Length: 265
Image (cartoon, rainbow, N blue to C red; front, side):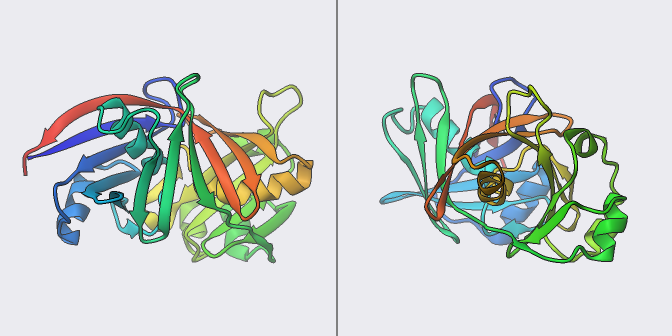
C-alpha cells in the first residue's frame, strides 16, 4: 500500500487551480504500473516520488504518457512533503528528475512556494495553417520553443472567448498551444493565458507552470518587467507569479490539499 494525495496547485482555494495526484513509493516502480495509476487518477498529472539520499526521485505521468518535465505536479509534490511533515518548512524540496535537479522553497509567512526552472524562450515562427484554423484567428505574434507554440493575441477578451478546434490544434504536431495576451486595464495581473495539450490527452490544462517558463521571458521583454503575475483563465483558474533570473525562471504559487488516501494495488 502506498500513500497518495490530491493537491490543487497554483491556488489557495479548494477546487480551483490545477489538481495533481502525488504518490509516495518506497522504491522505483514499473513504468507500466505508474501509467496505469495515472490513467486511473485521470488528473492532468500524477507525480511519483521515491526517497533518495539527497532528496526525492520524481517522475510525472499524464493519463496518456510520461512527461520529462512537470510544473504544477512538482509544486503539489513539494506541498505534500511540507504539509505531511516529511520536510520542515525551512527545508528546500529537492527533486532529481529526467530534466535535472529541481528545487522548491517555502515561505512560511505568506504560504507561497517558489520553483526554480530553466527558461524556455520561444523563437518567432510563421503560424501553421492548422494553428490558425484551430484557434479561428490570425495571431498577433507566434513563436515556438522546443515543445510548445506561444501565440499572442490582441486582448484578454479574445483569450477568454476562445473555443478551439482541438483536432486542428493536434495537427500542429507540437506538445502544446499557449495562447496569451496583455491583461485588461486595471487587472491585478500582467498577462492572461490559456493552454491546450490535445496531443497529451489534455484538451485544456487548468494551470500550467511550464507554460510560464516561456511566458515569463516573452512578457518580461514586452512589458519591460522582470517580475510579473500571470493569470491562467481556464474554468478553474489560477495565479502564477514569475521572475526572470538569468537563464532561469522562478515560478511561485500556492496550493491546497484536497485528499489523502492509500493506494492498495
